[in-house]
Amino acid sequence: MNASVNAADLSQTFPLTPRSMPHVLLSLIRNPLDALPPEVFTEPVVFTKVGGKLRVYLTDPELIYQALVRNSDALGKGEDVRRVLGPALGNGILTSDGAHWKWQRQSVAGAFRHEKLLELQPAMIAAAGRRRDLWLADKNGPIDLCPEMMRTTFDIIVGTMMSGGDGIDVDKVERNITNYLKPTGWKFALGLLGLPEWMPHPGKEKARSAVAFLRATLGAVIAERRRSGEERSDLVSMLLGAADPETGRQMNDEEVIDNLMTFITAGHETTALGLAWTFHLLARHPDCQARLFEEITTVTGGGPLLGEHVARLTYARQVFSEAMRLYPPAPIISRAVVREFTIGAHTIPAGTIIYVPIYAVHRHADLWEEPQLFDPDRFEPETARNRHRYAFMPFGAGPRVCIGNAFAMMEAVAILAVLLQTFRVTGSNEPSPKPVMKVTLRPMHPLTLNLIER
Image 1 (cartoon, rainbow, N blue to C red):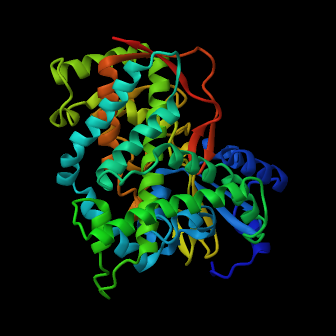
Image 2: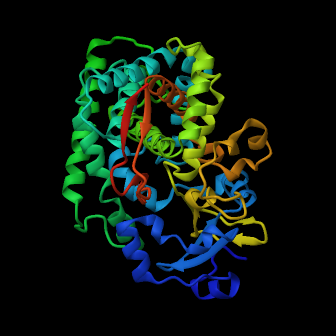
């Protein structure tokens, strides 16, 4: 097929699934998960045509591999990502393409080497301990998991990546991140219609103010670091000293802010949401919680959690993985096809939008037995080894897989272990809140639970 295939030929070339534009637009505004074609939960690939573009949804792990790994150089981040995340994250590692993306990723890779992460474990454990102590001091009833976990992971990422953050107002940062993400459904919908970015929509001014605050906050940190000339073993110093290996060019302040914004917003939010859903599920599955208590006690010998214990908490990793299967923090990957390529029996023309609906892949009827059931044993090491690598991808896939995935897993296990050494969690028997995509996967209603001191 020629890359210049026109829209009129699409229905003859691809088995298109009909979509209603009004339904898609309303769903994008309210909850982009509802805009997914229902067929993505049962079929390996779904073709649609919306907004004059061919849109391909891949849920078969082998097709995902062929697209995101074997043909990664034929894909760009695309307009959706630039429009929704660009105002906050600029042209940083999450939003850029090509050589600019590559040298930025190389610049920060050292911060996520295994030996570096091991050095950060005490800080992760200490932050979890501070949250435990706050919970012990405040026994005023149910807690709202999302903000509690957001503050905990923010404490960790600022402490480990920014050497404390020089007095950043954590609560104000959290509020502004929420204000920025809340109206993203409108950005998706207006982009689908091809409308200009200056078009007003609900929440736009609040989101713009949030971005200004967040970037100014990080700008002040960078200015102080440049003024002092102090070298620290953290991400800020690494970014300030990074240089493009081909040109020798260093990042300017805006580029440093782009990448700090990426790690501070995307980095801590995804882990926090994964943990919130994990505690919510444990509260509903006391048998799994009891098994986790037993593992933590066995590994730690009943004493405080140490860095050396984290890697041995196998069941804790299984629990967190299963929670991310049901509620992947980043539920959809989108890519724009920049040059024609073939996957399976289909040649995909340039201009196509490819989606990997991770939320659907993780609940796909052909990939998982009883996919709606919470079962951490799915991630027992031998079982996990026999599963296709791209059937489970909470951190993405291919060259652009999340660079902080090992950091996030280590952090999550440490937080679970520290808090569950002290508390048992219980919740209501009401149905779980519906997940809503605001770039990340948040609950429609608060995830509340009760803490019972053990």
